Image (cartoon, rainbow, N blue to C red):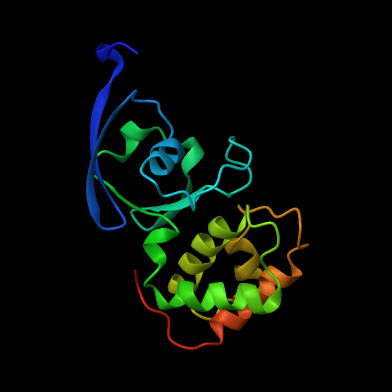
Length: 162
């Protein structure tokens, strides 16, 4: 690609400042994975499944739809960035305990979305829970186990902010 079609973008990912030179329309998903953060998965590549969910300034987004130029000066949190977050740890434990993780493709995006939901609403109603995870698709579990896992994690008590 010619240098005229390149842009240097500065942003923060999981608390670390990054500078990436790439075509301005390169997907955030590809950049994140190129940075070695392979927990973020590509499912559909069309923003329909949520497997590539990350937090952009604290909001859940599908990284396959975000051109890298759009993250200039912003903060990204991937599933790896939630490693020290107690809510995410409770969710991971509950996903294992309840059988909410099967093939694993949707799991990182589900955990990112569920963590964001529980930090905003520590005790969501069933409707709020379903709405909070509505952008994430799973072909393996039928959702019952995932919803139960989030309920179990919510029952663990106080959630902390990322």
